[in-house]
Amino acid sequence: MVIYAIQRLLLSMIIIVVAVSLLNVMLHLVPGDPAVMVLGPRATPELIERTRLEMGLDRSMLVQLAMFFGNLLRGDMGTDIFTGREVSTIVMEALPYTLILITVSILWAMAIGIPLGCYSAVRRNSWLDRVTGVLSVATISIPAFVMALYGVLIFAVWLRWLPAIGAGETFAEQIRHLILPAFAVGVSWVGYIARVVRASMLEVMGENHVRMARAFGLREGRILTAHVLRIAVLPAVTLIGAGVAHLFSAAVFVEVIFARPGIGALIVGAVNERNYPIVLGAVLVTTGIIVLATLISDLVVAWLDPRLREEL
Amino acid sequence: MTDIPTDAARAPSAAAAHARQLSRNPMGMMGLILVVIVVLSAIFAPWIAPYDPNAIMVGPRLGGPSAEHWLGTDHIGRDLFSRVVSGGRIAMLVALVTLTAAMSLGLLLGLIAGFGPKWLDNILLLIFDAIRSFPVIVFGLAVITLIGPSLYTVILVVAITSVPIYARIVRTQTQALRSAEFILAERAMGASTFRILGVHILPNVLGPLLILASMDVPLVIAVEAGLSFLGMGVRPPAPSWGTILNDGYNFIRNSPWPVIGGSLPIVIVTLGFTFLGEALRDIFDPKLRRDL
Image (tube, rainbow over all chains, first blue to last red; front, top):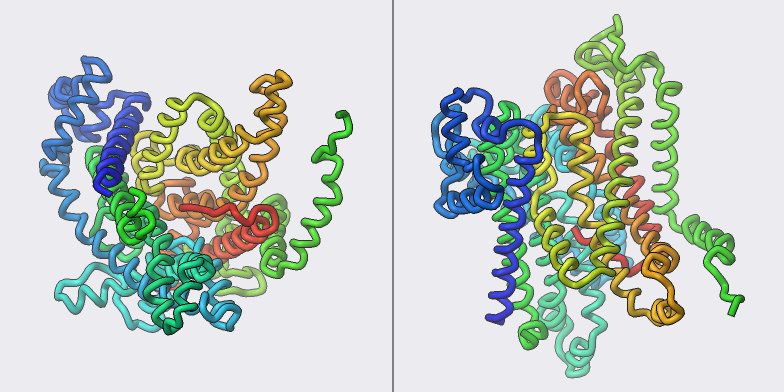
């Protein structure tokens, strides 16, 4: 297990390095002066010259990459030309809003999706199973921004039950402001999780150790929770780990539509003023989180599945 | 030795059997019908749209559905139905170009990874994993900052981010096949690598690839509409479903019709291709699992 964890950690770090290098290479593939790109529109000639030296544009590509990583390791992602503030500070201020949004979204989706998947597997071909089957296929690929727009239209404009704009000040207000965005981000995951849990439950229920538990006369409820579900949720964990990237993409739209602060709103604002340092900083941080999430979900799966744990 | 039955010889009966299977799958049939409607309306958009999608009408602005304007009008009085139909043309074009590019490149890289030396396979896998760790929209926004918003940027972004999905499928299938008996036999008879890849591996890989592509159409359309919604895809006044939705969002308190009209086709396309893709997958390759 320890060796597996170290291997996965190393691989994740290599993936981050490759991803960051790709972004950096991209900056150089585009026609135009990278220093001007990095500085954004309002750069003065002196500043451009200084940045050229700082980025090492007069030196080889490899040296530049090394310098870039050196800065990154010290937490230095450059300075925002418009406000003169550190890019890392700006990104870290926005990050909690997005993290709360996607965490709440995935948690409510799990809270409904997992029981729904279990029920559908146990009561196969019941009406709820059929409804879940059709609805999950239908909701899986409806984009989050369409869900968000209907959320605004129905609950904020027509019914006036929930606020459509901002993140709220007091705690109670913040929760009220979170309902519609979290609905829009999470709704397609309910069906997705239910579907995966159902499929893997059916698979696990046919396995020998479950038949054995039945043969020993264990109660059906105990078999399902202790022996079946425990293994059957693992594909869902992998799915969510791999889906964090999609959650971030959905968060971009939802933050724009509900005028919520967050990484997505930050990036869209920065793209509008062609403020590349902020965009790059935000992309780096989200990519890091996504790789980390995949790593954690892999480790959780290895930890929860005794068969895998033994092998490692 | 010469009488080896080929795929081509039994293709018609197999195709007929598959068609029968599809016709017995209600969700698949519904998907097929929706897809046919959308594709036809995209092809014949200029003849179906009752007005010029950018023409400003004399009638009411933000009007509801009426006999003249089936989906109502937008904030400057353009006919929404005409805009939605023309938007379908852009969406389908983007999906077609993007998926063709992503599939071709994915096929090539997947074959290289699956059939080439181990070290090359490892490098390619690393690059695939790195690309997969960018959220599509966030990566797209980064590219847009660099090269500016346009239809081509959208196509480029979606193509780059989808290549790893296709390449991985092709790689897995190729690896499974490369040690199969019939490939070894072919090799023993002195067949070149190109012959093995082109004649034996390609036909086996193409099926899963096409099914994946049909399930990916909604994804591509969502990214195009999404970026256009943010004002960073198709440039206004061109009628993308995303720009229609953006107009609708800005006037959501005045009229629901632009939002409803702009989202309706997205929902129809999504359901159509997803239902059809699921049905095709069940018929051709039940084991093909779609990971995110």
